[in-house]
Length: 220
Image (cartoon, rainbow, N blue to C red; front, side):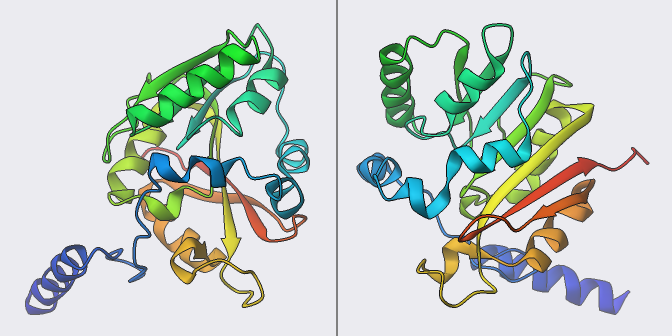
């Protein structure tokens, strides 16, 4: 009983310090609209190889997809083109200004299968049991309420849906990203598994990022 009380106090302390209660990882914080140009920088093509990443993940025509932390839509439009007019992409962000940029980008590309969703820091606000795929590209490490967000994401997924995280490799000191914007595979697993996910596939084909594919564990 005493040990449990100590653990609860430690968890409360870690939350107050803006770090994850399981791994002690410090939350990176959300990039504001002022960083939108960085999200669409030309170098991102070679650094992250987004089209190759989506090839590896596999996007079928007609998929219903959630792009969490969609920003200005750098990944969203690629998802929308791949799933096609019979599919749909819910483009989620917590910043209205980012969603305004995203809407303009989708109009410019004449994409009509994208629905912008203004989420909250603790709720993606997605329809339940709908998603074939939920994707977070360089986003999960920014969550300030990761456990609550994961619960909402899990509820939004179909029973056979997939949750995919792309995160810069913290195991590699040569990856030129600030430490709080990188994660190890061990950290991701430690944080997601208690929320009802299991690692189904780990892909290490990109220059700088892990691709971690999770599925839902059976409801207990």
